[in-house]
Length: 216
Image 1 (tube, rainbow, N blue to C red):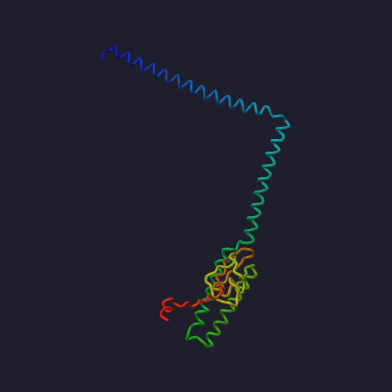
Image 2 (image 1 turned 180 degrees about the horizontal axis):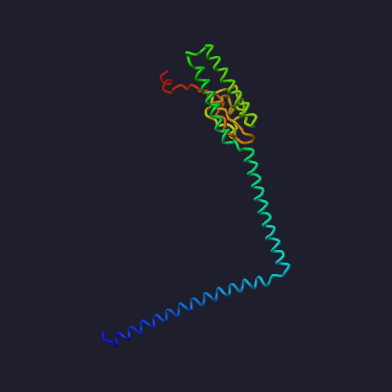
């Protein structure tokens, strides 16, 4: 390649770069013009508002602000009331384990063959019953009470059915056994009662085998 060809290539490249730069500059100018037009349009809209319209706009914004403040105040009040009313909810729920352990201990002792019908067992059971009664009394003072179960209709909001027991003397769905006592704290469920519910006895009709009938 001679010097003249090299010079022509360099000049051509320079011209292309200049053209690209000019095109980029033009695009930037267009974007700037569009942005300026948008700002001018928004300013015109603001200028078109009459004093009465501006007053109404301010009133609307003020009303929205007050409404939001009132909603926040109500939420804070509700949270404050819940904290006061149900602050001991978690503690009460954990304390129910003590009652469960007392009942389990009592059942184990009563089923111990070596301790059955002994004076020692009777005294121990009496003391366990006193402790159990005292705990229930403390719970009651703090608005924690057992859920009614026996002879009640099964309520999914309060009871959890663990088994079905055949019993024609009761309406189906009636609670006839309480496996674990449930508790309420005011209007909140601490835990559901685990129960057994009644069902009708299934009568199985004996059907003769067709083969036996043929043999006869």
